[in-house]
Amino acid sequence: MLSGHGSNLLSILKKNKKNKNLNIISIVSNNTISDEIKSFLYKNKIKIDIYENKSKLETYFFKGAYFIFSVGYMKNISNNFSSKFKVINLHPSILPNYKGLMTHKRALINNEKFGGFSIHLVTKFLDEGKIISQVKYKIKTKKESELISSHRKIENDLVYSELIKFLN
Image 1 (tube, rainbow, N blue to C red):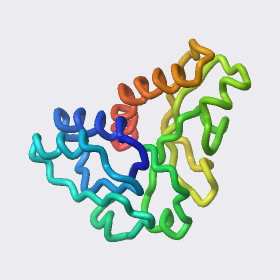
Image 2: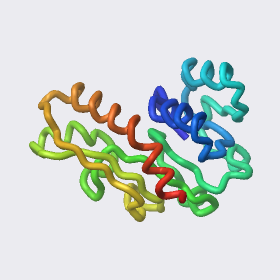
Image 3: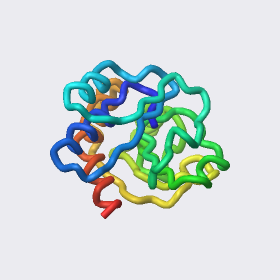
Image 4: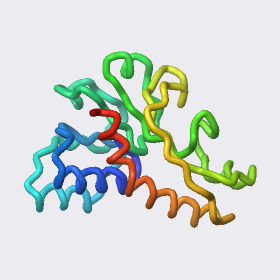
């Protein structure tokens, strides 16, 4: 599941093409899925169901899924939905710090020395689920746009391997 441009998803798809560790069934977004992702799937003859511009999560989007991975899905996942599936979320901070939105801005305002990301199980409480993995890095800028950019690169480089570690 995603809401944004899907850079982490594209990174996962590219790494999975080489390693084939995940059987990805569907991609679901409440927005339009990027042409870059669609083009990658088409060029590599990867068959994945795509559901875009969906305002509500439906169980049939995930038929046959064992886990659902939220990579930048910016809507709350209802308790009713998360109780039917094992949902894993990628969160852009070292939880329990900076739950919710604007994590980078809040870290900079508080002069944090370190940032990172957490992969955790989704529960009915926002960003409260069991931590599966965390990656920490030194914050080297005071500019939010630079921090977000360096953070995305680290996520793109490491999120696939962290997810695979958990699944194995």
